[in-house]
Image (cartoon, rainbow, N blue to C red; front, top):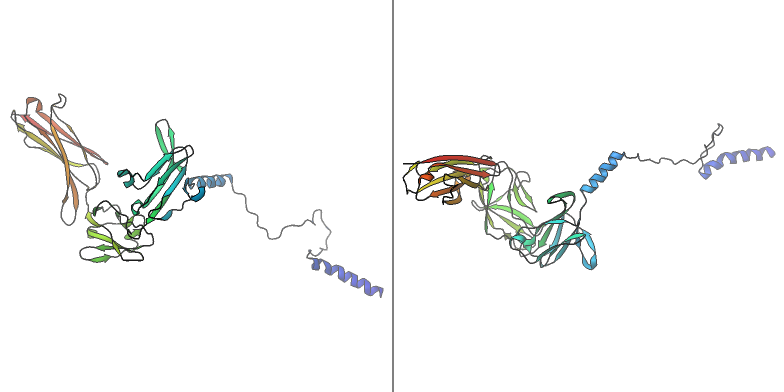
Length: 374
C-alpha cells in the first residue's frame, strides 16, 4: 500500500507542470537565472540609425502643409488635394506664418474682384472668398516667404495647396472671358485644351468640329486631367483644326467654347532677325524707313531696341511695333514680328548705321544696315 501511494505521488509531480502551463523540468541542474520568464516569439525591431531618423524628419518637413480651412464655430480642417463646394458658398482659408504668399485663379486679380479678401495677420495669412461662382474653380495655394533684406525666397518645407471645384449644374465648364481660344501645338512639348469642369465626376469627351467626330482619348497620347483639360502629349500637324469639349452630369450635355489648334514648327533659340531699309542712299529732306523683322513661335513675344545715328543728339524718329500670325502651309503657323523706324526730313546727321536688337526668352540677335547721304 505504501508503495502504491509513493508511485501515485511521483506520477502527480511529473504531470503538474504540464497542467499549470509551466515548462517541464530539465534533468540537468539549474543555472543562475534559469527560472526567469522569457517572452516567446516576440520580434524586436532593430533601432533605426540616426541618419534614417534624420531623413524621416526631413521627409516630414517637406510634406508639412500649412493650409487649413476655417469651418463653422471656429473649427479648422486640413485640406485634401481637392475640395468640392457648391457655387454660392463662401470659404475662408488660413496659412500659418508671419509672411505668407498666396496663389489663386488669376482672373480674380485681372478683374480686381471685391469678393476676394487677403490679409496678413501676426501668425497667419487669411484668404476669404465670398459668393463663389463656377469661374472661381481652380488651385488655391500658399507658402511661407523667407526674407533677408529685400531678397525673399519660397520656403519649400512650408507650403499648402488644394484644388477647389465650385460646382454648378448650370455651368459644367469653368467659364472663360472669350468664346474662342487659340491653342498652339508645339512638337516638343505637350499642348493643353483647357476645358476644365466644375464637377469632378462629370463625363467629358473631346470632339472635332469638321469632320464632325469624337476624338478618342487613349490615356497615352491624349489624356484628360480634371484640373487642366485634355492634354496632347505629343502634338503633330494631324491634330490641327477646331475642337470643343462636351460634358455630362445628371442632365443635358453642355458644350464648351471652341479651340483652334494651330501647329507650330519654328526652331527654338534667339530671334531669327532680318533688317532692310527703304533705300541705302537718301537726299536731304527725304523720308526713309528701316524695318526689323523676326520670324518665330506664335506664343513667344519679341522686344525690339534701336540704335541710330542721330540718337545722341536726340533726333526725333517714329518707331512702330506690331505682329501677326501667318500660315506657312500644311497647317504650320508662325508669328511675324516687325519694328519700323521712320526718319522724316533726312539730314546729314542721319547718315550711318541703323542697328536693331531683337530679344526673346532664349536670347537676342543684332542686325544692322547702312544709309548714306547722296
